[in-house]
Length: 237
Image (cartoon, rainbow, N blue to C red; front, side):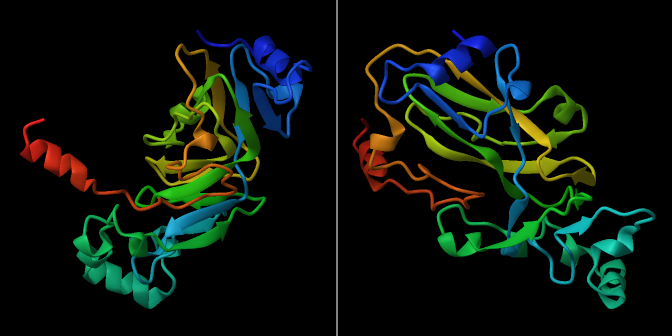
């Protein structure tokens, strides 16, 4: 069952527990909805260096009368793009990420100016929520707001589901369908809470957890290739 907005606030204020079920910092009643709490975009984004074509900008400051040329560092880079577009196509294998290799996940930081930043539909961005949250005895998850969806802004790919015991800011995997302006502290999503059944296995007590107490956008940890699964398959189990 999903918690209502008033129940979310009640769980935050419970004084009979050493640790409340829900912590949201900062918190403001104006962000509390019928059954969720609105989250905001922190002003720093990260981009994987390997995914940025040489001579192109990963994002550009919002301004009037921008053209395709503004995505490029110099007029010569733009001219090269017109002559060799395949060099700048993100489908080119030269920009491949290896989920199991940390080397390909080196990032650069991009600050979102108050006037807004235009994101490219060819780049994936790691953002984070302004809000720090803690969740206990509940299942938290985040999703986009309706207005985000209608602007074709995706704020997570598969990582919208959290865990009982997760503490930290939420890393966002942001992708846009069109060149789209984002602003620091804009509402970027909502957090929901559901009850669950069964014995707890808190995320913050699990030695295998990768992202507890994360702050700001956190790049991907290498995905493990489990040799024991290969062995079980080989044995037909």
